[in-house]
Each structure stands twice: as structure tokens, then as C-alpha cells.
Image (cartoon, rainbow, N blue to C red; front, side, top):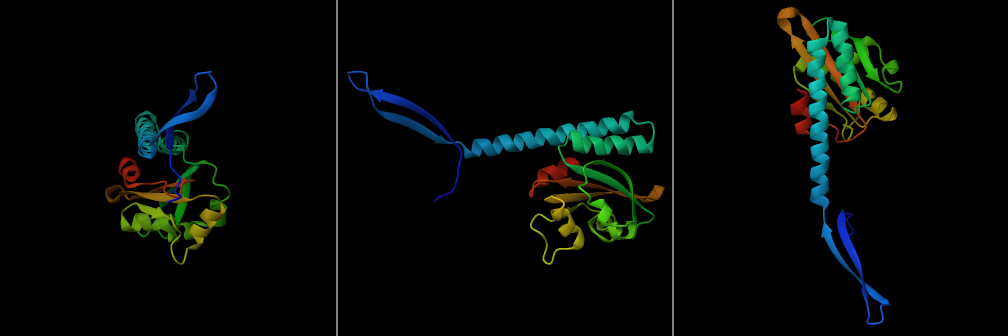
Length: 193
């Protein structure tokens, strides 16, 4: 079929009576499934390590800003994501978002948007809809400004995770960016929530 795959090969020389190599014999095995399982396991372990670091951030922080800083740092350093930020909205409508904390290299991404624009895109939508939203695995048709700018900055996907506590009037979002087009599988999302 021409499709590439992983294989394990054991190749041995075959010699004649004079000890001269006449040909080789190979035993090959397709290990594509094994490689896929290894990737999934590494991803799961990385996400569990990230989740643990985020939980430790909550327990060990003595202020909200310290927690947000540790949270963003954990997502970038433990999670291996290039960039993360936390934004606060004034209310449930999330028409404007104020970036409270960030970690990693945004590659100039946030400089392209003001607070009102951030609220108009996926981060604000996640707060308004009260559910996580994935960004641009295959670019929506037509793509939005924030998706185009994300791709231009080298990001391949993102996830906006809402943090809402209406009784305390808290409306926020944790926005994480990935260099991987399928950077947030259903398993990833389950662990990040």
C-alpha cells in the first residue's frame, strides 16, 4: 500500500561451507501498534505528572497569584506544552478577558489581541458555554483571526478550560497551546479537567 510502518528486524548472515556469506535471512515484525501504545503511555504519564504538579501547586501556594504562576509553569514544564495563560473575565458574559498569568513562549501571539478580542474568541466562549473548547486541529472553515494567528505563531492546537464559580463571582479560563495538531485527545481532556 506504500504506507510507512514501524518494524523490528533481526538480520543474520547465511554462510556456505567455506565460511563465505552468500546471503542474509531476515525475520521482520510490524511493531506499529506497539509504538502507538508507547506514545499513548508516554502521553498519559506526562499528563498525570502535569495533573500532580497542578494539584501540588494548589496545596503549596499561599496566594492566588502564586497558584496561577505555579499552574501555568506546571503545564509548560511538566506537560511539555509551549505556552499557557490564565485569563479572568469581569462576569459570566466574558466579553473581555484580562491575562492574569502566563508561562512559556507565546511567540508574540497575545500581542495581537486586546482584552475585548480575547473575550470574543475561544477563551471567552469556554466561559460562556461552561465547557472546554478545542481550537484549530484542522482549522475551521472559515478560520477565525485567533486560529490563523495561532497557526502563524507555530501552534497547532489549543484547549480552553473554563473555571467558573458563580457563588464567588469567579469567571476564568486556562488556555493551553500545543505544537501537536492532535495535542488534546479525549483522554488528555479527561485528565486536564
